[in-house]
Amino acid sequence: MKLHFGKILAAAVVCLAASTAGFAQSNASCKLVVHVDGFRNDKGKLGVTLFNQPGGWPEKTDKSFRHGPFPITGKTGVASFDLPAGDYAVAVIHDENENKKLDRNFFNIPTEGFGFANNPKVTLSAPPYSAAIVHVACPVTETTVHLIYK
Image (cartoon, rainbow, N blue to C red; front, side, top):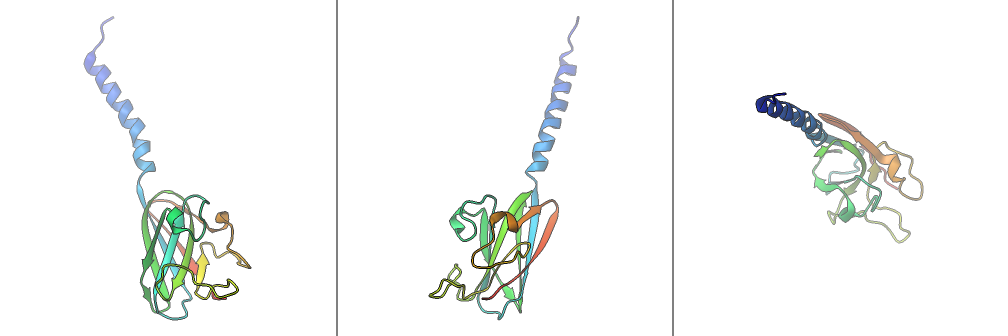
């Protein structure tokens, strides 16, 4: 039995290409666009925080996957993130004084607007992580969040 090195090498290259093709697709950069409406004024910034796990949800930005300020235009704002495909919980705030946190009064009630992906009902505390998950797929996923003011 005679082995042909060229055929073996070609087969190995085909196998390697096939095994890495799926890897490249799973790490492909997708875009998540978060539209936010219902701002009571155009002061400050839109703060958006993305979590890919429940730890730190929803306010610990140091435990978030991505976060950032975005401009407000009139009574709307738009945030755009390039991300790997996957599930992300989304929390937003209207950071009127630009101090990078949700301000609260003496009774711990938010004094600035806030919201979550899927617009779950909010009572006395933030909704669970699972209620605000958006499945991000390529090339673009969009979601709209309506701000709440208490």
